[in-house]
Every structure is written in structure tokens, then in C-alpha cells.
Image 1 (tube, helix red, strand yellow):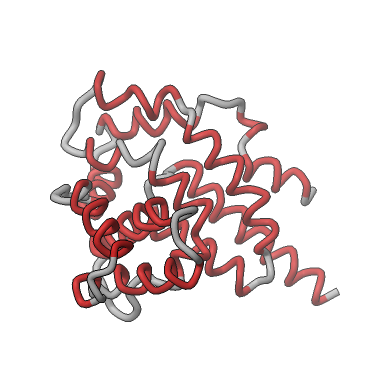
Image 2 (cartoon, one colour; image 1 turned 60 degrees about the vertical axis):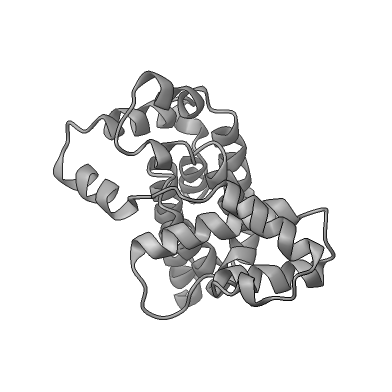
Length: 212
């Protein structure tokens, strides 16, 4: 009975974390935490079962793709990540977890490093053997890419990341605005992408209904 109770509590915690990701998909640190907790609780299969459809939905979202052009805000650099980087983070969270900074770090730094790692993985996948991918991702995570031998793979990756560089991601500022300003246009954006599918089709709803 105790196992059953503990298992249900774990399932509910997973469902609530998944709900948070569906409501606020820009919470990349939260997505990584969900993946980490899934590993701890033995829910890796459930993670992929839920995260994969969410990633697919965001990738083809009309609201996510068209919003910045129609409704410019101070957070467009973040919003533009929703149909591109966010799905990649959802699909590759367990790989990225191996290379994100450890120890004390700001949310903005963790967010930016996750974006960079996701883009590095995209650039490397299907072009390099796994051992080389691991080596280069470790260097990106530690900000030591320039210390690697100047081979073609490292050079190509530097160029790919530099092409996407120079962009600020005010993640912490965005969160503060969401908490402090109910009239923020970002709330309207998040509602738009959330309501693109019927309520019962959200992955956390499916999961909660399966536990009843």
C-alpha cells in the first residue's frame, strides 16, 4: 500500500511538472528538471511518451511561429525559441543534462547555456560520431570550445554557434514580468499556444485522467 501511495505521489508530481511545461514552454530549466526527476523516479519512458508529442506540437505551432512578427515585444529573442529550440530541448533533455553547468549559476546563464548546447547538438548530429559529439558538447558546456584542437569539427561548430551568437535571452526578466504584470502581452502569447489544442489533448491532462 505504501508503494502504491508513493508511486501515485510521484506520478502526480510528474504530471504537475509536465503541466508547467505545457503552460510555460520557455521554462528550459524546468524542462531539464523534469527530465532529471524522471530519471530519479524511473519515469524516463513516461517522459518521452509525454514530451515527444509536446515537442511536435510546438514545432508546427501557428501561434508560436507567427506571433513575433505580429506582436513585437522586448522578449522576441525568447519567443522565437519556442518552435525551434524548445522542441529540441524537450527531445534531447537527457543528453543536455550531462553538459549543463554544475553548481551555483543564474537562471539566465543556465537558460543561455541550454540554448547553446541544444544548437550545438543540432549542428553535430548525423555529422559526427557519438564520441566526438560528447567531446564537443562537454567543451561547449564548460565554455572551453576554443581550447580544443583546431580540427574541422570544432571549427565548423564554432562557426555555427557564432552565427547564432550575440543574442540576449532575458529569461529571468520575462519570468518577473509574467508574475508581476497580468496584462503583459506574453500572457496572451502563452494562452494562444496553449489553446491551439483542445484541453483533453494536453499531455498532462491525458496523464492525470489515466490516474483516475
